[in-house]
Length: 197
Image (cartoon, rainbow, N blue to C red):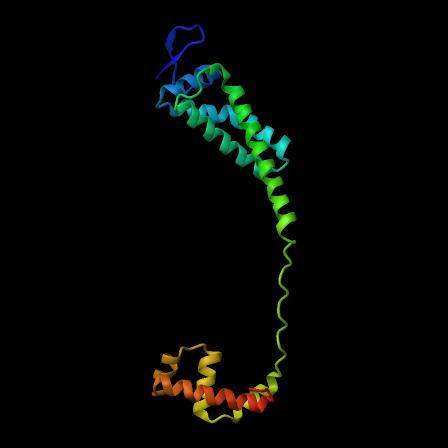
């Protein structure tokens, strides 16, 4: 791969050492197209600077990492499209993109805060509804008072969590019959537990 040399003459650099290039030469190589080594070098060279800028201005490690990705992608897209006319200004372009991105993030955060203050009170987490107290011993006695078929339907439906069709095939009755037996058994259990229907 051929990269422009610092002297202005064309020479061939080993693609494994693109770090010998200046920022302007690196930008020119990416602008020329199909330069994955140069793009990797751009990331290696610029990412620490962008991350440092993000940490200083955003004061959040994850936000700084997000800034690195956003700015590098913007720089690569700009260079690939040939929109950076002065390659010597690559570092200035990257810094300017950092500044504009951070300003946008701050504006969006402020807009969000204003909208929340204006249109919505802080969200109050829902309080869980109290779980009703169940006298398990009494319930056990009530279940034992059921007839065998009703007890089987209740145990299979609510303890074993079987579907109506499974209970029906197990007992050798229709699914509609299972629903009727279950309904009657629940009604009887409510009466035994002293719970209003």
